[in-house]
Image (cartoon, rainbow, N blue to C red):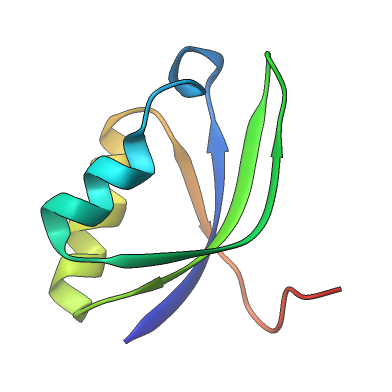
Length: 78
């Protein structure tokens, strides 16, 4: 199963490998579609692939770390 998500990172999480840790822990393959990161702000659009249960757990873990997660519909390649 695949899901496209938009992640917005709080400033204190920008330098942490939260995506790597989530992907490794829940056996999720992330594909970065677009990213914009500064010292104050981080935003990414990812395509996540894994089992439905693992995707739900992974997204829940990101939210628990303060990362805002929104589902994205349609193609994000512009």
